[in-house]
Each structure stands twice: as structure tokens, then as C-alpha cells.
Length: 255
Image (cartoon, rainbow, N blue to C red):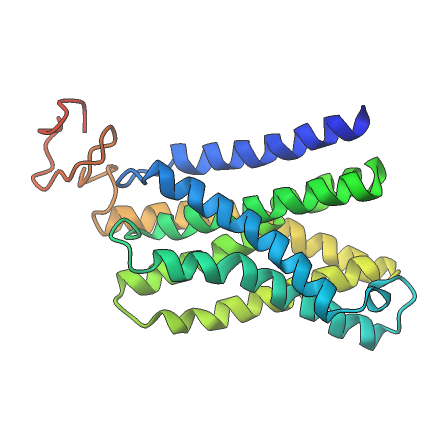
């Protein structure tokens, strides 16, 4: 019974964050189908990451009591694999799409990919290791995967809007890979100090997601990509409102 409740809580976190981001997006409406695709790619990325980790990493190197240098190398490898599997497929698919055109798009689409990844991981861990593992993950990881991927997605969108090469996003991607590796290292190290560092990492990254989303909304508003301020798009139908009318000339609703 407790496992079932934990699974519902994980789903609730994912649905709640997705609703918050989508409902507070003040730019052109995103294609619903693409929002689902982003989530599905994240879920598929979670399964593929698990396959790669099983293929490339020895479980013994991730067990408590492993020499710390060996453990650190293994957890950094996990960070590289998981962040790449969450980010790269969606980035390749979406970067040149017309509707990927706002700072908030980078946060929303990639947060959804992270949610798909994290939800599958949390459910599998809870089913495999029981309610105790699920309880720990409720406090540590409900938004972690969404936040790390959204941070890199924000910089990808920022580069597209500035008409710069997408390869510049390799730096923020490398940073979140390293943070992810350190986070896992702290949890598996058996050290209270390192575990506290992992808790600090997940708290900062998870709260940083909301700060980043507010920043992205503000940048969209300053560039006229938001219905707030200059009403460049209709908030009801997403139709372009070039003359900034109070009412949309396409659907008739308040722009």
C-alpha cells in the first residue's frame, strides 16, 4: 500500500511541475503533441541510460564501501550518461523547430524530458528496492532530473534566440554532468559530510529551476516574446499579435 502511495506522489510531483510551467508560459502556445514527445523522449532516455550503465559500469563500483576514487569515477560516468540521454535526443529534434523560439521553451521542453526520465527512474527504484528507497527519493530527487536538464535547455534556447551555434551549450551540459556525478557520489560515499553536500546540490538545483523560469519569462517579455507587456502573442490561441491589440484579431479573445 505504501509503495502505491509513493508512486502516486511521484506522479503528482511530475504532473504538478508540468502544469506549473505550461500554465505560466506567457509566450506562443506550444504544440501539445511536442510536449508529450519531450516527456516520452525523457522516459526513453531513462531506459536507455539504464541499459548503458548496465553495459559499461560494474555495480560493485557503485556500492557503499567502494574506494572513493573508484566510486567518484563511476558516479561521474553515471552523470555523463544520464544527462546526455536526457538532453541530446530532444536537443537534436527540437533546436531547428520554429516553435522553439523563447527562453521559456528551453526550460519547459527540457524540464518535461527530465520529468519523464526522473519519473521512470523513481518508479523503478521504488518497485525494485521498496518503500524505504521511495521515501528517500521523494525528499531528494522529485525535481532533480527536471531541473538539471531544464538548465541546459535554457542555454540552448538562449543560443538559438541569439543565433549562435548550439555547440556552446556543451559547457553548461558538462557542468550539470559533473554536479550530477558529485551528487551521486555524496549519497553513495557513506560519509555524512558528503551526503550533506548532495542534499545541498539537489536543493539548490531544484529551487534554481523556478528562479531560472522566472528569469526566462522576464527575458521573453523584454524581447517582445511574451503576452505580458507588449502582447506579441495571443495567450488564448497563440496567434501572432504584431500590432499589440488588446483583443486578438484571430480568435477574438483578450490577447
